[in-house]
Amino acid sequence: MTSKVRPLFRKRSEKLGRLNSFVEEMVTAQKTIKAYARENSVMDKFKAINHEAVEAYYNADYYSSMVGPTVNFINNLSLSLVTVFGALLYLYGKMTLGNISSFVLYSRKFSGPINEAANIVSELQSAAAAAERVFRILDETAEKADNKGATELVDVKGKVEIMEVSFGYLKDKMIIQNLSLIANAGGLVAIVGPTGAGKTTIINLLMRFYDIEEGAITVDEQNINELTRKSLRKAFAMVLQDTWVFHGTIFENIAYGKENATMEEVVEAAKAARIHSYIKRLPEGYSTILNEEGVNISKGQKQLLTIARAMLMDAKMLILDEATSNVDTRTEIQIQKAMRNLMQGKTCFVIAHRLSTVRNADQILVVDKGNIVEQGSHKELIKKQGFYYQLYESQFE
Image: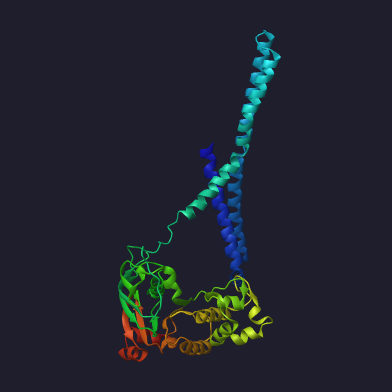
């Protein structure tokens, strides 16, 4: 019976997980659903998924509920046979009434735990099926521990060197091939190129979210594989295209990356990010509570908050991955000017699709298919009239 019931409970957990996932996804995307008038289609799909979940629940409960009554029936049947057989022995004088009563009571005591176990077998099967999903997550490969003897990255200057690095998320499909570059301390390096060229992958390798297959990456002439991940990542301040805020005050969100940050420091960072005037217009100012999704502020304002958070961090290196994609061009130019003044002496890596925003970079790396195809300043690359020139001109067509 276990071999029959276990797959049913496994299927029930799977269908319930799919139903919950679908509901969460549709609730999150309700504005998009309404914008495209897809309410009826979503309801039909929900009904189909819900029907599958109900069917899985019914089958699992139906077959599992048969175990308890079946065992109870067998135990009661055996008790009846014992009683009848004992009565016959009593009639022939082979056994006394006391012996029969004792035997019946012993049989009841023996079958009692069996009946109880049979009645909860469905709960045990359900728990086992749910545990399989939990253990599947626990069995996933964890991030590798730091190498033995790994040292802390201290007194950071910010010089980064990538030497003939090759990497692929799949071993048979390399994204980065023989990549080399030098970012001097305090310099501004822009990484541009078409979608899928490997720009964000370079950032993931710098932060050691993934380990490289070949080559080496050094920070201040120290191989990052010989450094602790915590000290390496604390040396970077990072602003991504996908913004993140948590439930708490605006002050707490901006001060997230720096312990014991003062109000003066937070205000200075907010002013540099061009978000201070907006915050002051709020009824509670810097004490305004944001929810987990940050739906009570716009995407652009949320991105400015994350930029202020990065500015506040005492890090020698800054990574901006399309960090100003949700703000208008005028605000973006103002932020870049403020950031250049604020990040003096710090190494900056900027990934951008709008090439007009990286013209002031010390060096521009043009990445295509995992390789740096061009490298130089904006004026130098325009004069070459190569791949960068084509990308630059295409945004004005």
